[in-house]
Image (cartoon, rainbow, N blue to C red; front, side):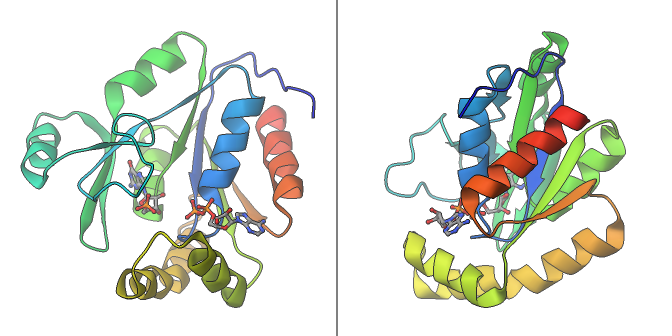
Length: 192
Ligand code: ADP
Ligand code: 5GP
């Protein structure tokens, strides 16, 4: 696959229910868009096996998260099934100012906040082909205990409804065949 050259810094928001394929798509974008940087979110959830602090996330205590929130560090933040997640503002602003694109994977509550604060952003909502695929993907990823997995699946319909009803997403893509979805997302980014 040929690399795509994104010359102007863009803020690219990727949202969707857990298991839809957001991380897979973001990883491909970071590999294939030479100008793109990853927004490292801060979270209170525990690291999964293999997740290194400071790479996929910065893992912090609830107290540290609250301190940073009060300090105004976050561009947006949300509570997702009992854990806090937030996007540090400063690295996003620094990358965009340097002409680099920023890829951020955030939930729909965060998507609403970014739509208001940075309306020029490209906001893509990733849908699974159907609910059976979503379950199969989450089960196949094997990163969550059963109760956690159920909670995540239980959020999906509501998240999709908010994404559709709010009108805050600029694009919806159905992640059926991953390679096709990646191409579709790259085309959206190039056209914007
Ligand atoms: P999310 O970040 O939205 O929670 P992931 O990217 O972790 O989702 O994907 C969930 C699981 O589904 C992973 O095991 C991933 O390899 C797999 N997956 C992603 N996209 C597809 C696809 N189009 N078809 C089949 N499996 C997929
Ligand atoms: P996970 O625990 O699977 O990594 O992420 C759970 C949910 O939190 C996903 O919908 C993911 O997109 C979202 N998320 C990750 N980082 C952030 C963030 O910084 N802000 C918000 N609002 N959501 C986030």
